[in-house]
Image (cartoon, rainbow, N blue to C red):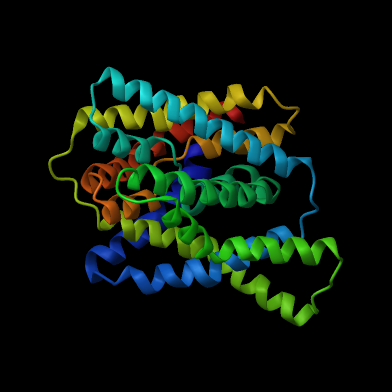
Length: 297
């Protein structure tokens, strides 16, 4: 049963982080910094160092961009129909166009499709992270800032440098000594469980008071239903490996990315709405992902 074998193990890890945070109210910044600057870059480096550059990376990038464009159009149309102002539209955009392919998507894909699927999920996570850094910042900051904020955000992401270094080393066949590579491998193995715990802790910090149910319902439908359907249609445009197609569709079905809450807070774009969207879509995704993975399997 998909729920027991894939979803439940993920829930238990999230719940561990959630419970820990509810009891001890820890400062998340040092833990998040550890994940951002050491754990995730190590995982990304290992993946790209051991992965030959092939057409699949292009497919992942292309489908990610097309999915983003499609979601932006759907959300913009929805906002017009609902007569949302610019701020509400931006908040809705942050809740629909950017999915949590990192500390949620990667472990789900690992449990659902094994190491082969997980191998695809890391480039997907990297591309989605770059997209979020550019367009997420834009939608959060439009009218308040400029493109320099997005550029600075990208330059601060060590995982991007890990990609470049790993690709260069792989391209020029530079062999890393086994003892050094084992160190990288050991740290990389810690990345996924730690970021899963962090997400659980982040969810514990979200307040669910005075939920804007209309907007949250729209965000949930776009994020959890329209997004994977759109991803499926986009995948038909490319001769994708069946496993890669499943990974892309599953990634598109992830809940709102927790990072968008930070953008909403930084630029004061209805942060309560965005954070609530993250919480609600994460909870609802336990059901929607169970259905989706049952279909894909």
